[in-house]
Image (cartoon, rainbow, N blue to C red; front, side, top):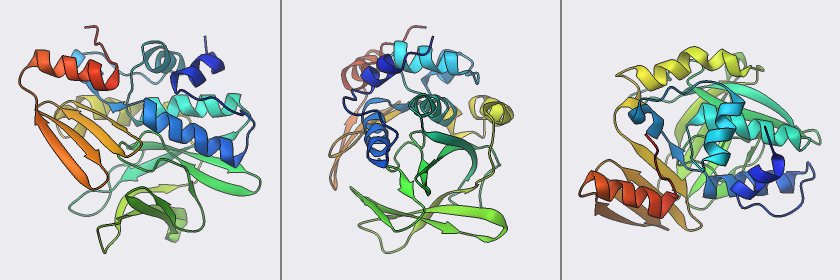
Length: 253
């Protein structure tokens, strides 16, 4: 059921499909601009299962989004079909009060290409638009990113907004290869636990050329450069109209 061209159409990608660094960056960028990071199925009472066929139906055919397991799980398949060497990685997301969450709390990707490695991630919400190389600092739009090697084989992804003086950690990961089914328990936790950020309110967000657009239960936030504009969501009907207008999503309960 997986159709590479239909997937490329979904992310409005037109160009070479050779497994090169330039193509990898372009695919990643287009994915971030077109496929939202969202948790709407949780509030529709629909279980999110780790299955690439299900991911494809939702993201490509229904023109929806998803969270990390879905977005990176399916993007890995696209890249593999195009000839990229892809490895699934387990990440531990940084906790604002300090430390990191559980292993398998985030799914990211490693792409190895021409003796160089890239961290690929289209499933972390407000994050980098192009892959992060295991090398120099990557400056992108509002933020700068870099990867730092830690002891015991861990790497930390650091982010520093242009308006800030200090870096903050986004997540911790190792390069140990993982399988999609390894994330089963944490995928279930993310969509059912009252302690999960995904059960605390609806979220739908995607990058724009100049910023980001985010819809929550009570507010629509549009960021352009350093400017932020907030608009109240007045009703459920209003919420659904904004979801369709800005993300092209019409929910089927």
